[in-house]
Amino acid sequence: MSDELPKAYRGLDFLTVTEVRHWTDKTFSFRCERPASLRFRSGEFAMIGLENGDKPLLRAYSIASPNWADDLEFYSIKVPDGPLTSRLQHLKVGDKIVIRPKVTGTLVHDALIPGKRLVLFSTGTGIAPFASVIRDPETYEKFDEVILTQTCREVKELDYGHHLMEEIANDELLSEIVGDKLTYIGTTTREDSPLMGRMTDWLRDGRFAEYTGAPLTAETDRVMICGSMDMLKDHKDICLDIGMKEGANSDPGEFVIEKAFVG
Ligand code: A2P
Image (tube, rainbow, N blue to C red; front, side):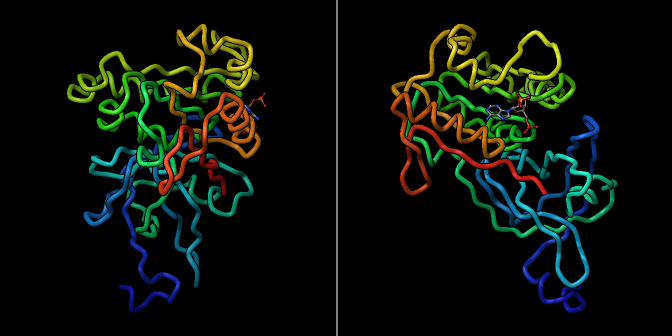
């Protein structure tokens, strides 16, 4: 097959889509088969996309499935004029996606020093890498408590997060490993819901401490952040203000960031 394809496709894999689910008019998730050779750490991303003439159309996507899963899951925004997502949103079961089987990323355990509480801050589809991290047993070996926050504009956008929690609760093995260590805090900013406001505001005005039982501290907490550029900057500033150091794979720290990829 690769003999017939242009050079730009060399080294890429074609994977069959096995499930597509539309969550809102702005978001959808899909699953595809996982090549046996593709190994990744929970929280990493890969370049994925579609065949597109001489050159494939590829964008960075966090892998939402945990590293032990048989298939690959992705959670994506739909950008009406986005070169890739405007097409990707029409994926159907049986279609093929293209993947560069080389994964990387900083939202991984290796980039954090040991701690007691793992706090995962996300907005919108920034929850994707954490969908992987919260389903990884290693997360619960390393931390006593895991808090996942997701801020979205509207209530319906929190469905994916709530569904993840249900999926974990209904998984016999995983629910035993997770126990009562995991909390999901879904907040909205533009539609009324029980929990409202940006998480950055919650951190600054004490609502985060009140809700979780303790303020964010460099001593016990380790943080992963995934969202828009503005969101990353604001969360990063809060982490730096409380004396946390940014970590990397080569130099672990107290917090790590990754931008949520759109395209
Ligand atoms: P808000 O509605 O107050 O802008 P977006 O779609 O613009 O990426 O936003 C997704 C969610 O992230 C919204 O709920 C938005 O709140 C929130 N958000 C946007 N910017 C920031 C930021 N700098 N810090 C924290 N949350 C943010």
